[in-house]
Length: 319
Image (cartoon, rainbow, N blue to C red; front, side, top):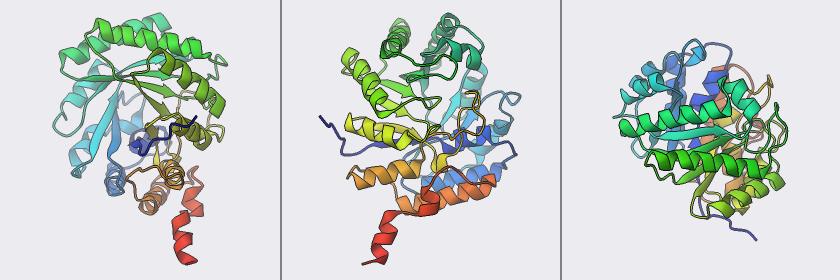
């Protein structure tokens, strides 16, 4: 049975996720140029920076400068990412410009939790308790429970749907204990283990447990399956997706140097266009922005659509 949505929401993460992994320095001016160009494509939510340790992620040492100087476009929501109290305090300084919302971020893989966060699952649960209480105290809404490695892990192997359900339940319990009614469950294919059957099994298990919660997908194209997995998500009625223009970025802590990052925004948009699902995005304009991103980072990006072009451009040419 298909539950295809009539429209979807795309959360563009290219600026934040993409620039954090680039080995060479990217100027603040180029970051701002890309952010402002993305806002002109019809995208409505853009994650523009990370407030993280400059020692760990030196490419976002200029987060304050970027947020200060970017010119916001009416109707576009700009967001940021942080991982600790200090990062939150930095983000709060831009409350008038950024839409701040917190997440209860967990991982279905104990091995990846230790590798990525240098703490055990139990320690991470306690850290999320503290962070959620802080968000509530600061008036920052907590809107989602996120589960990394929800479909498999390079360090632990296959992840059973039951493990994902257990992890979501722990996250929702943290929210309840802190007085937060979380509305969304975000499932992340952090290391590219998802396939359409896995998407169906995990979403099915989560939906069976919490039919009233919105499910969103954060897909990586590590093994070339992201578009197929998005198709599976669409058929199951998923209406919210994270993506990055050109396929910028990736997870620098996943142990796969050179692997492709998130699903390419333009490929997701084209898939939706061909299926009659509204995105509100001008695909041809977005492709041009993807080419701009390639020029900024100075190397080819994973998106095939940047080089193949949009179908509608060819349709117009033959009619």
